[in-house]
Length: 353
Ligand code: SAH
Ligand code: SF4
Image 1 (spheres, rainbow, N blue to C red):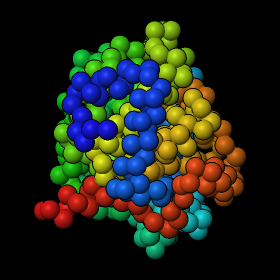
Image 2 (spheres, helix red, strand yellow):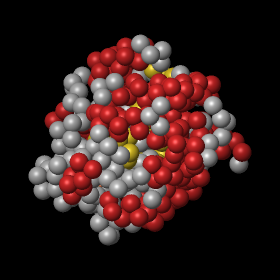
Image 3 (cartoon, protein in one colour):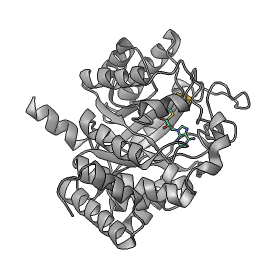
Image 4 (cartoon, rainbow, N blue to C red):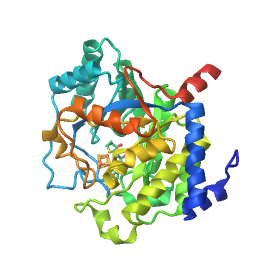
């Protein structure tokens, strides 16, 4: 395998159907991962705080235009109790995710929530937020309240494609600006894309990896696009690659991102597990090092369908972590308990400052 890949190399590998070539790519990505970040899998317990959203992204099941969704907001107490349970189970980090809201009341709710979680868990949990685009002051307040990482997917690095996936008042430039602010505020910054979208080309995906590299991100969360029938994009479902093809493309994206970006954290995402029950384990074997077990109580989870077919897991998360531990053991990976598992890339950037 070559040490550095140019755009043509990336495009060729993404398009390749040569089994031997793909096997080499995957084996090399695994080697790079083990050498650079090790074979530990870091956990981020995912809590889906709310499905209320002011945005109308054409691909997403909980977009504000979908009237058939029953909206919910988890209470502060419920989230804090879940955080305490996660902490006791040995989960080192949390991800708080939700639809996008930026009204004052909500900003304060999240700020208090973060403070409460920190107080109730000895400030030992690493907290990641995935709450969409916000004002600089909001990002700042949330960081001061305890968050240290932020996930904001660019969704696609092709601005023209971005426009096709969103209404006119959703701005690519604004999203990019959000990522820049987060970087300036010294968050560990994560981004990512959906893979196998209508109108998306192999060249777009290759550019996405180069975007991650050029933007110098610390964490990547990406996965296959999965159509949801209550969305405008659903009409193109027959024009996208099959589920199997989208999963393979996603695995290649993980492998190439690991090889090219080296020391970042890469998540094995739920969307991969949706297309194949072993999708996350497959991603771990080709370069991913983070898994986000879903801790959202089942009664809410049913209403957080960004896409269809999201796995329904038992409410007992101790049990689901044990099951995960066993399936990871089969592929020689170990869960890192009680560790934040911060991005090595972030640490190396800060050392250089
Ligand atoms: N509202 C926040 C966080 C929740 S959405 C935000 O948009 O940033 C989290 C991610 O879910 C989005 O970034 C998007 O990449 C993904 N997503 C939404 N709909 C999807 C679909 N149909 N298939 C796959 N991923 C989807
Ligand atoms: Fe809202 Fe995020 Fe879904 Fe867009 S992707 S509609 S911002 S939850």
